[in-house]
Amino acid sequence: MAIAIQAISSHPLLTRAVEELLADETDIPVLPSACDETEAIGQTSFPRLFLLDACSLQTDLGPLAERCRSRSPGSKFLALLPPVGSNCSDKIRLFYWGIDGFVELHETWRTELPQAIRSILNGHHWVPSEVLSAFVMHARALQDTQLLPGHSLTAREGQVLQLLMRRLTNKEISKALLISERTVKFHVSHILDKLGLEDRRGLLPEVFAISAPT
Image (tube, rainbow, N blue to C red; front, side, top):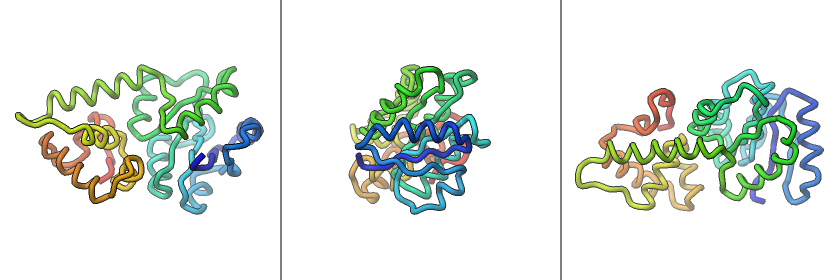
């Protein structure tokens, strides 16, 4: 696997359970847990798969993921959610913030967590189908309503658009698609022109558009 796992949680029982669970996954490197954001981002800025504990972290996981990603480009994120209280709309919001998966801490989470980690490390998402459906519908609606007459997006521009919608920076898109940042900038410029938008904030649902990367 390309990157190591690190939990960010102030709950010692959870971090111990996660580390013991992943100890059996010998091909997945696991780093000691960080108790908070400061400890996590204060370390060497290499990409990681961060496990974000929504039960103990007293902060919005979306902006937290963005701050961690700015410090460690190429990182991925799996949110550990309470078994009750999490709803689809909040998962959709966090997906737009760039979080790649969700595991609710119910009775089967120990079985689900390794599966979710492997899926994300292999470039997939671990999210409910409703979340992906809402995201795809928005991407299609954006193109149907915003594309200027006579314009269409290429297949590559469609890929870039979906990553832009999830707040990835040009550098992160470059890493994800294995293309140069210069090429990403070229695609972003064309996408915005074709959609008649001044900047990438217009690609997000209005309620999620605050603090979009530039």
